[in-house]
Amino acid sequence: MAASCGGGGSDAGSPPFGTAGSGGLSPTKPTTPTSGTQALTVTVIGSGSVISSPAGVNCTSVCTTSFSRGTLVQLTATPGTGVTFSGWTGDCTGQSCSVSMTTDHKVVATFQ
Image (cartoon, rainbow, N blue to C red; front, side):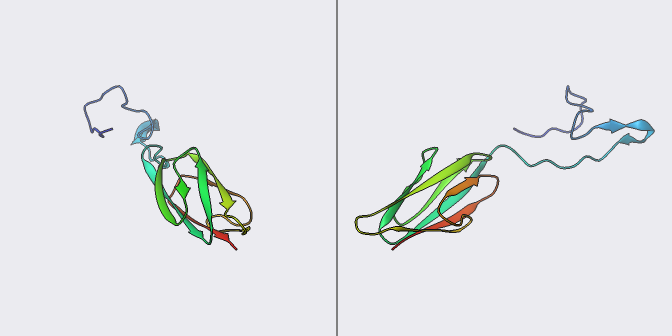
């Protein structure tokens, strides 16, 4: 959406340009944009794969996928034959991985 200035349209006086008292405009706290996309980079070490919910990631090496800003992405690691899933590192740790796409994320799934 293009920003507009002046003109006194229907949004005049509403956040983020609220009015206050006799001083006219008062500053307001900036908000985080809710539109756009963020990148999720998945690296797979060893024999295995990673998929995501919502769909978008289906990775067996190094993959980067964009998700809408604010989306909660759950990653699932599946080990290949004869190996086990060791865990997540990067922006996830331990045995489970869920990231909120408010910024770019990088995760590593290790299989041994």
